[in-house]
Length: 306
Image 1 (cartoon, rainbow, N blue to C red):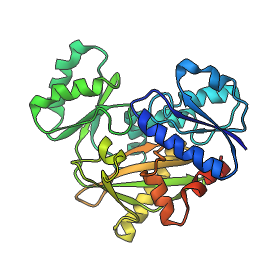
Image 2 (image 1 turned 60 degrees about the horizontal axis):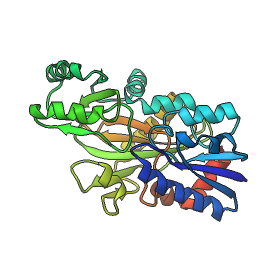
Image 3 (image 1 turned 60 degrees about the vertical axis):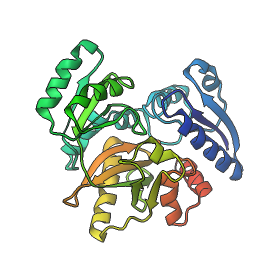
Image 4 (image 1 turned 30 degrees about the vertical axis):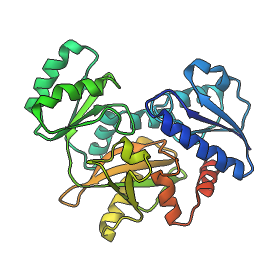
């Protein structure tokens, strides 16, 4: 097939997307496809507008890639693409909205509140409200950003203001939520709509305090245990919750669902990634490997599902 790969982009996750794109391009070429690589930028829109391909494989992360905007453009152009559509992408990217949907449907989420940070004069008021509402430690992060960019685990009251400013650099809305201590796990989901399957659960053991940008993308930054050493009951619940979360948002083809298992052995859902990393150190390919699916076969499977 003639397949265009959109990668790179202009978000804070550009470096990761460059690596994801390279992996996808190589895998598609290995499978005999005719590949057109595009390092995407909204300023070079004509590259997308003039595409003559059978399918677009989106290897972008974060803004203008994972948030539904590029999907809307491709829909208008009538070009099919791999992965979730506009609404599912936008909902998954908006952490506050997706959490509302999860909790309404019986999935455990951390207590949270969202604040508008477009007006800096409101920062003191927001700081006071956070102090009244949350007990230390808690997390302050951009509402729509990936790869833990702009995230702070606030352990002291005097750090709240700085954490608000850091998160506000990345987004006009920030999310404050209880810090849940526990084991970090993630579950890849793939399949036709209504027939999705969960892949083996992965436990992530970061070398830093939490699974931050360096832990995710630097070689040796974290250890992945696949399948995670959990009871059969907890494994089944995580896989079931992942498929439910994927379906509740209306995701398509594939996604990856992140959880923390708290001290009571309850899975607390964090978010759904509609375009999870596909770099050589990424989680989804690791989990696929555990069921005998090579990286190239996994990419080909996404093409077939699409």
